[in-house]
Amino acid sequence: MNLLLEPELTSPESEEEEHLSDSSLSVPEPDDPKVNSQLARQKPTILTAEDTSEAVDSHEPALDLERLFESAREELFEDGMESDFSRKLMFLILRYRHDALSEMALLLESTQVSSEVSAEALRWIGRLRDPQSQPHRLWLLERSLGNPNPAVRDAAIVGLAALDDRRARKYVAAALATESLPELQEDLIQLLEQFDYPENRYALSPQVHSEG
Amino acid sequence: MPYLLRSIRKGRWLPQSFPSYKEEAFQADCFGDLNTSGNILSLWELQDDFSNLDQVIVALASGRDYLANVDFAVIPHDSVSQCGVLKKTKGSSPYLAANEDWHFHLTEISISRLTKLAEAICASERKRIGQKRVEALLQRAFIDKLIDISVMKDSLRQKVVNAVR
Image 1: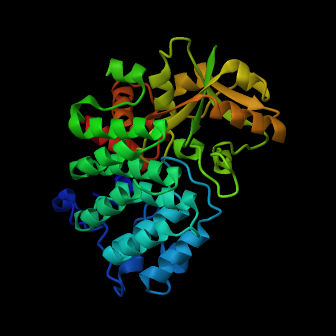
Image 2: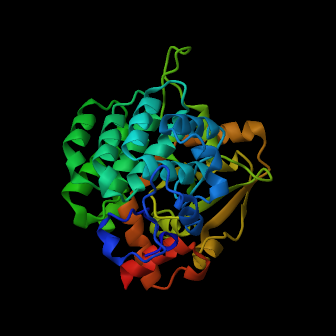
């Protein structure tokens, strides 16, 4: 399975591992000389050496992520569309995993970071299929349900829906009890329905729901 | 034609506290969903009974890079028509029939009109169709041969096709 043909970013340890071809993405190690050549083959889902040079030149996850978040401040994001930021972020998370996610947790709490960038990051860490980092990504998304910025909380809901890990249920229920915005309450309820009734294909719209 | 649909990102349209404001206010980030080109924005017509909502969602979702939720605002036609000149135009999604039947351009949008449109969206209902539901709609559209998969992005096309096979 080639990542070019796989819309959900997938690491080799995922359930599909047995079916991966030689051209699939190997999880890069920080000093692995094969990293850039492997990634170049995965374009556009993953970065080429040129694309990543700005994001990974320090080999320090904290610095790389900080630079990446700052450089994305002017980027315009759209649901369902890749961006320079998303490609570089996935590269760094697959490269540094827990170090990258720990740094991300700090950045998401910083008032210096754009909420637009934080929201985009949360959407993408929910999309990633990488069992090794899943507990850490789940933790980060759950934690972000309590972020003071509603746009970040909204993105955490989207990320958790994409991750589709029922272990988040109790945290989603707790967030629903404290969420003050009706629109986010509605989305949290939908997420609970997704966990509880996966066969429903959970649409928010009442019209669609009744048809489903 | 009572309503028009504009694709948005819901999180941008949530009221927020600002340290310099006494009350919560809508964020300027919402203008990220009103990125005009040639002073034009793309909208989709919704039928009176919303019976074409699923099809419009398919049109929006099938033109993307990957499978994701679809967020949208449902804006009264009268509110939109005050913000520019509405013209029925052919859309560019992989759903060819939807492109012909329900796609509109709002043209001649000035700064003040764009602000007025943003205010109209703030006052409108904003909804989300979750990723799983979007996936089901795309699979159904593929089975029913409603979408031209040859113009879809490789990753999304493969996801939809593989799930159905």
